[in-house]
Image (cartoon, rainbow, N blue to C red; front, side, top):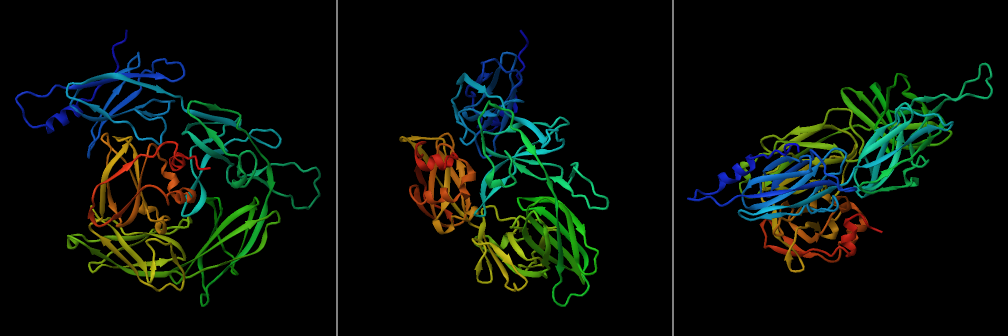
Length: 557
């Protein structure tokens, strides 16, 4: 028999032992051992990576590899709480005590001198999804990127989030192997704006020949995400023949013109970028050389687009955005008005214990509408007196990052004039003149407690949700896993009214789902949190059959 392949990291035991007070006789050490097998046939899995982690403020990890019989072992372990995780190429990662990725790992309570050798991991093969990409004539299309996307809610809007992808080969075949269980929308992205060869039945001398191109396509054959057929995938399964038949589409043109702001006569560095609305990144960009600021975009396939125009005048950048739906006939009169930027001034104040010891450093703006900037990040250093000035801020929706917060701090308020931009979107317009005032508190709310199920301590995911009028504010939510004793701690919380819930399993993506938020209106434990420590709160784990619990697992009807 081959010598065991497992290797144990003794640093874990040594580190923990060093923390123990000196005694005349050290407590006996324990051990954790087990086996890793294939879920389908129980065959041992060799050289799977097993990670043993402590549960503490600064976790320690030890790593072992399984031997030819699929066995692993960790020795010289002090008493404590541990987690076990297993990974292996071509298999789904697995943690002890979990049945789905939404469930927190179970905690192993190891006593002094205790030996546990009954751990069995049954790994499932990774999900495989494959198919072929062909054109309408049945010929393979190479270098087409197939992406598995998922519906999510962001900023109170339903949209598709990027996911795993694969690229078709010379025979049109693609294969994905890094999918997690769930429901996906598949979309094919041919190489951007590559023309398709399509023979005409007749050719007339001197006649302009039409151009064709392969546009993006959602499975099984639509250019609209809402009309796509979702595909549900489960662990250990192979899904083949998920084929695409991408038809060449007659391309169209968009003709338009930039509208310079009043008083601007010389516009330089004129630039337009066009992207699909359902695919903001990427796209095509080109400079405008015509004196009348006109432009033409050729070889577009019909669909929704975003046009972003930019130009400089006297050292000041101007920007305009238009969202349009380009039909089969194209567009001939698209106008894009360029708005002047503003200089956004404001201040950052710090309140609370030891406020004088903390000095804010920077304030940064990031696009909140998903439309990226082509210029440098919008950022300003904060002056010693707390003031700042961010120059050349274009019109649009902007998220605010006040920089590093105190260790126990939180954002107390953010106001643009009379508007609360901590809980509402900050929309900048050419007419905006109000000051942005940010207040940082040094002492956020802290809440802790215990999760129980059936009267016993339970390992669970504890969710803190704000009162209904602030349910749309993602930063007000917190969720953490309780430890092996059911205890949880949440920090850096904005003081206010909340509800606490505990779930057997939880998918953080549901936080922004409006249906889930409606369900939060009932149940849970109501708490009012103030700055600093708050009284401990006990919360019962919802039954897996509870409608709210089912919603967190992605089963919202």
